Length: 255
Figure (cartoon, rainbow, N blue to C red):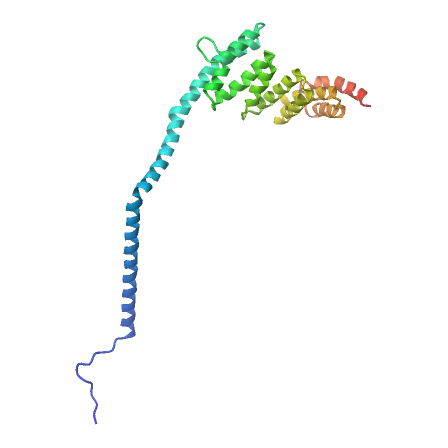
């Protein structure tokens, strides 16, 4: 008996068509997920936009404030401080070369002719290069005025990248302690001053002072070693001219 297909029967769906349907369904789900995520993100932004904009504003204001402070506050302040320092430094230099130095050192410290002195600059222009240099000059002024405690106070405040000035400041503190009779502190500061920077001027200068002071304090061997270092490493220095005599005296004390 012959067989035949029943009219109206549906054709079977191929595997290829099934895959297309699955892919379309997956794509739709991805877009639905993206839409949902975007919608939630928009809701979050709307909800917290004041905080977001506030944070952005704080960052922007901080940057602008820093730039504004640098350009409109700090730089003019530094220029003003430098201008004030010039006059005080002028009095200081006059004092160094004058037989009536005390009054000029005091004017350098306290100001004159409508200009600030070192002490005013330190107080009113804190953090500026001029204020740092004023601390050094104030300390040196007090040292020359024989006000050794004040000299130590201001020289101890001095901190700069200039290694030579740093060495001189340490050495001047040593001088002040020596004048106050504190030989141990003076000795330590002379050694610090000698170690700040290896150079022809400050290193032999403070090694020599440490040697003399150390010898007075019973540190003969150390004193001789300092003198020998000057003799070896800095033969052209001013102090090298005195090493032979001093070393001979110390070697006699320490046979």
